[in-house]
Length: 217
Image (cartoon, rainbow, N blue to C red; front, side):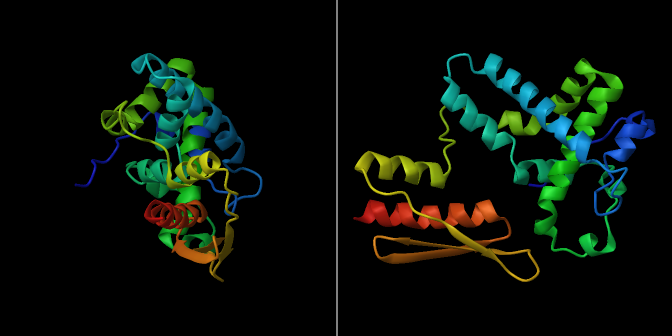
């Protein structure tokens, strides 16, 4: 089921820095959103951490970190950005616009963080906090303290460390267009391969294959 569009306050659209948050570096080398993205990343992390800290008072630091990572990652941030009703404001170079959609996820995620940074500077602490909580409302509703938030790569690392086995080395190469990544791992004499639109996803897919193989042994 498709998630509803996220409506942005019209007053935000009048803010100079909010407008700048949509300018990717490929569009302008001087007045772009990189500095705002840097700030927004930190603001996002602190408010998501605070939310989880108070909502899940019985969870330890490790579980909270895993839960935060499930919320704040390139894919989830990109998906939230694509739900914004002002996403068409994004300004990039012509070449960047022609990239495969999934390859632009990092751009979308960075732009969302830049928007957060802009609101933090222009309107302050509470407004940026409320903005973030609204953005993540549907994601928060899916949280459950009993869900296993460890990704395949982390699970594999734990299993191998418990067995005293060497950790695998991930070899990742991109295609010519840079919109697909191929990961290869040689483990116990076997070759495991997978591909994905994101580098981390290709590594996770290979980790899942190895995990399944380990469980078979």
